[in-house]
Structures are given as C-alpha cells and as structure tokens.
Image (tube, rainbow over all chains, first blue to last red; front, side, top):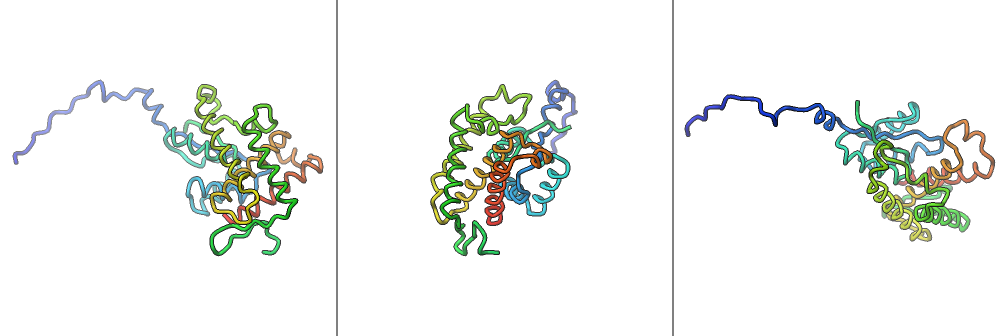
Length: 101
Length: 144
C-alpha cells in the first residue's frame, strides 16, 4: 500500500470552541445536605446502594456531610447527576445538583 | 443483643421482621402516611417529598417532579403491601428503609426540625416519634 500524505491542518468554524460550549461541558455535582435526624448508618447504606461505593468511601462521604453540612457525592454529566439526585431524594435524603466550579 | 433486634438477616438471605402488633401498627401508619402524602398536595408532608433538584431550573422541568412522584409512590406502596410479612426480600427491605427515612425527614421538615438546636427543643411526643423511626432505621440498616 502506498503511504498517505497527511493533509495540512487548518482551523474550520466547527473546530472553534465557544465559551458556551465550554460552560455546558463543565460537570455537574450531586450534593447531599446534612440534617439533624437521619441516622449515620442509614446514609451509608443509601450511598452504597445508589452509587455502589465501598463501605469506606460511603463512610467518608457521610462524615463529610455530617461535619461540613454538605458533601459532593458524585460529579459528571447532567442527566446522570439528575438521576442520582432523584434516587437520593426518593431514599429520603436532601440532595441537589449544581454546576461544578 | 441479637434477641433485641427488630430486624434480623437470616441464612437464606431474607430479613426477618420481629415487630409486635404495636410495632406493625406504627409502621403501617407511617407507610400509609407517605402514600397519602404523595397523592394529596394538601398533606403536611407533601412539600418535603418534592424538594427541588436544582432550584434555578426545577420550576421549568415538570418531568423531574413527575418521575420522583411515581418512584416515591412505588416504594411506599410496596412497603405498605408487605407490611404484614414476617420475612422481607432485599427489595422489600429497601422499600421499608426508604419509606421510613422519607417519613423521618418529613416529620422533621414539617415540624421545623432543621438543626440540632431545634431538635433539642422539641416536645416529648415529637421526640418519641422521631426516636421510634430512628430505632427502626438503625436496626434495618444493619441488615442491608
């Protein structure tokens, strides 16, 4: 087979990344908020069930919620963040989503 | 200690419910309240079951509320359907746990118990209700 000579690279309109595109590609955080009544062990069980995290990670996240008032428990695409947020709310935890900084 | 547990994981994988009649009655009442709260907008727990996902956009996204409404109702309805069972599957136990937790949070929110300070000030009846729900949740979480 003959060698293929690479074409000289030029910038086209479609390759220009606008500031709007950059914004929409920022990840979304799922945030869980502390409350004064939910047992700590219940939070760990819910995190493990919904995210499949290890016990250690679930405990660390639970402690972060407890001591800091809130913790980011997952980051990624918006549709998945919304899905996780709904699951956490259905399980009885206070959860929201926010755009990552 | 094991003899005092309200829920016990058996060797066959099922979870045994060791509640007496009064305990069953309490839990049945809790699950019924959650189901009713989901269906009736005027119920005192209704607002706490519909927290916004993202306060800046949730009002424009009725589908997000709809999906939560149907999913929550399914869990509470399943819990209510198997409230008299002596043994629970993992799925049924999860429905119990989430419905009890939803009830606990709803009791707290509807009574303005949003801080440790407020929790220390509540009356005996409300404290008893919260502690009973917490006791059930503690014991069930140990099995899951």
